[in-house]
Image 1 (cartoon, one colour):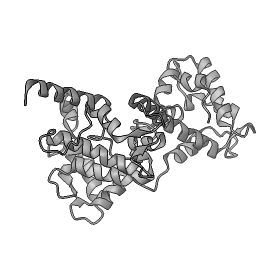
Image 2 (cartoon, rainbow, N blue to C red; image 1 turned 180 degrees about the vertical axis):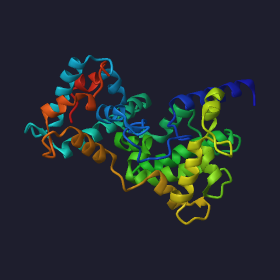
Image 3 (tube, rainbow, N blue to C red; image 1 turned 90 degrees about the horizontal axis):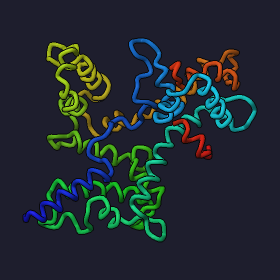
Length: 331
């Protein structure tokens, strides 16, 4: 390979890293919580989890900079948006709908940004060749002998497989809605088999189509945990030299993940792990917020009850919702 070709390949890889769909390493649990934070820390309630759930992470940071008075004023505006029927009460369903909307807003905004970046055609559709060229730097078949490195071809083929699954009408192009499923397959029912397949490919190092306990631990306890040696020295270790939380994950694998107790996770067990079906985080959070602020115990909240417990719903300095307020989003 000439130096010019090497440079072009390096450039293409940099473009791929900066703009490609991140299919190589991802958070495993699709049915993720409403925040990266734990709802309880050392047995104490963590209000920041509720703020993330109610506002979204970015808007929570804006509220954290407000005075309590400003925080209450902005919360009052939100409450009027949540109370869709205008009856003066926020029901559990209305609160659940709002939490789901807040969580979906990131996906919508991310899709809008990526859609514009990939410049759809005059029919407002995106073709695979256009996507491949914009993302990877060229349009030719990556599987042709000598075309690209094997790892690079694998990246493209993986995106192509996800693309074809997202293309519901099989016309070879993606609408904006289909492109959203492509970017965020974990949030589309018909894409979840792809999520399982990609998870196996990421973790299954011996390529037997299953995930054993060491592959499972290696994935969740990666190089990032080895970066700070001082932190590692301070962590509680078990007799195997592992942090206690790793030992806990081993127990999770053996007792709950590996249903048939054969020492490995098969496709169905992996699906149950990353796509659990029995827990509705938004409903649980709505119930929690109501039970924590419903003074008269009638199962719904007045605007005043919410404002009285404003610090449960939002933060303040006593502890950029601006975006949703200034955009006047339809909800």
